[in-house]
Length: 234
Image (cartoon, rainbow, N blue to C red):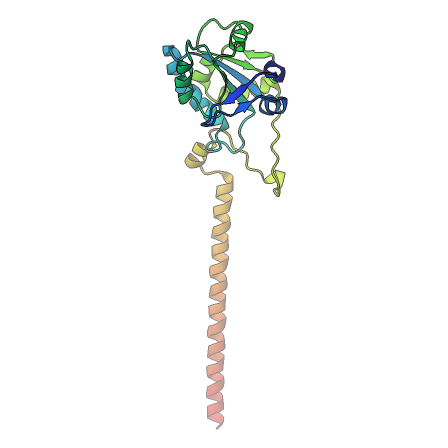
């Protein structure tokens, strides 16, 4: 799939619109990833309706606010707009981590022909080897949401490797796309164990304090009794 965009310029949809044009940059952004090619136009009403759905789908899989480890997924907007102004207007509403081809790049038409795109919106989903997973995933994204990515991942046999320094692998807390909501709604086993530990620790602490107080009281009593015995002998 990397070969599909080698010797091409991909632009990041951020404020600077950084260009990725070296083999190293293209490989880094596309290798071992599922690729979504989003064919659309600003003048298409259905594209405008689908856009917020796609943005939500994409950010739930890529945004650190929703998921600890962003998924191995890349989204490229292939504009079928009639003018650069239309393309720019559409890009303003797209997620900032989306890539796109420049308006004057003729490769957009080649991709449209290659993947037999007859209507918009169309989302072509590709495996890391470039083979087609779905010729148009618009309906799947609308109806299944993030669940359809798991199906793509299994079909593509995509292996996610996340490395972290100074942490034991067994202790990693892997989150799903719905984990923030799930953790608010349900009490996980880790949370329950943590609360039990604090309760036990609190009981032990209270018990220790009681024992110390009892010991101090006993010593005070013995000291007073000793003082009385000394006074009597005198």
